[in-house]
Length: 465
Image (cartoon, rainbow, N blue to C red; front, side, top):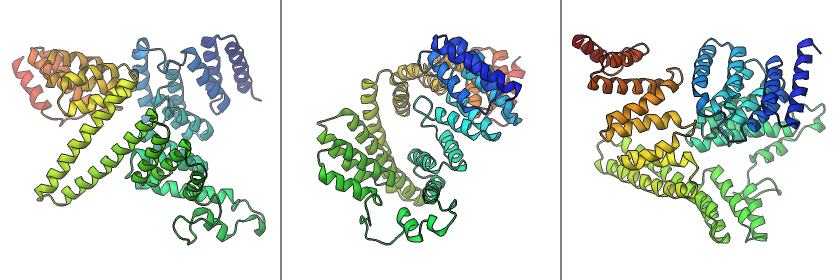
C-alpha cells in the first residue's frame, strides 16, 4: 500500500468513527479527503455520499439558499474544466459542490463523466445511478442515455437493458435506445449461457437453447416451450391460478407497457384498480397511461397533417386533439397537485399547461412554488418572468429575470442565457436605464452576434446617449 493510499485509509477510518458518533461534518471532510486521494475507490465515494445525505438530514436539498453563490461559481469552474477535458479537476470541483448539494444530478453526473473518462467505471456507475435515481433527475433523458451507455460499455447488460427501457419510456421514438436494449438482452443471454467463457463444447449453450432464450424459435404467438420463456404466458397462467391478485395484474400491465401495447396495459391496470377497490395510486398509473396513449395519437395526427399540408381538416383534427390532450393533462395534474402539495414537479407541470392557455394568474403562483426546488429553479424563474411580461407587469418580470441571471451560464443554458438578458435589456431600455440595457445586450453579443435585433437596439442606445 502506497503512502497516499495509507493516508486515505486512515481518513476513511476516522470518517467511519465520526459517523458512529453522528459527527457528520467531520465525517464528510474525512471521506472527501479519502475520495480525492484515491478517486477510484468506490467504498470511499459511497461513504462520502451517505455521510453528506445524513449531514443534511436527508432533506433532498443540501445547504439551501446560502450555498447558491458558491455553487454558481463552482458550476462555472466545472464548465471550464470540462471544456478543457481536465477530468481530475472536473471530479474535484464536482465533489466540492456535492458537499453543499449532494442530491444535485448535474454534479453527480459530472463525477460520473470524469470517472468514466479515467476508466473508473465502477465509481462512474455509482455516480450516474445517484444522478438519475429517485432523489436525482429520473426524467432527465440525457443523463439516462449516458447511464445506459456506460452500463452497456461496462458489460452490465441486464441493468443496461433496463436503463435503455427507461430511455424508451421517456422518448418512445428513440430507435437507438430500442436497438441497444435488444443488443443488451442478447449479450446478457450469451453471458448467462457462458458462451464466451466456455472451455469445451459441453459448456456452451446449444444454438437452439440460445434461440429459445432470445425468443427466436418459431412458435405460435403466446405459446412458450417451457415456463420462464414467455413472461406474458407465465403471468397469464399465474393470474388464472390467482385471479384476484392486484400485484399480478399490475405486473402484466407493466409487461404490456414495456412492449408498447398501451391499450392492453391500461386494461390490465383497470382490472387491478377494480380488484383493489379503488386504490388511488393505481388510478394515477391509469391516468399516466391514458396521457401516453393520447400523446401517441397526437403524434400520429401531427404526422398526417405534416404529410398533407393542404388538408385543412387534417390540420384542424390535430389542433382539436392537441387541445383535448391539454385539457386532460390539466385535469390529471390538478388532482396530483391537490394530493401531493409538497411535490414541486407536479406544480411545475401544471403551471406549464396553464401558461399555454395564457392563464397567467393560475400559472404564476405554481411557478413561484416550483422555483423553490433547485432542479426546477432556473426554468421556473424564467417562466415566471415571461408570465409577468405577458400579464403586462414588466417590473415584476424584471425582478424574476434578475433573480435567475446569477444562476445562468451560457455553457449550461445557452438559450435561457440569451432570452433572459434580452428581456432584462428591453425592460431597462424602456425604463430609461440605457447603461443597464447596454450591459445586458452586450452579454448576448459576446456569445451570439446575430441574436434577434440586439445589434440594432445597441446601436440605438448609442445614438440616445
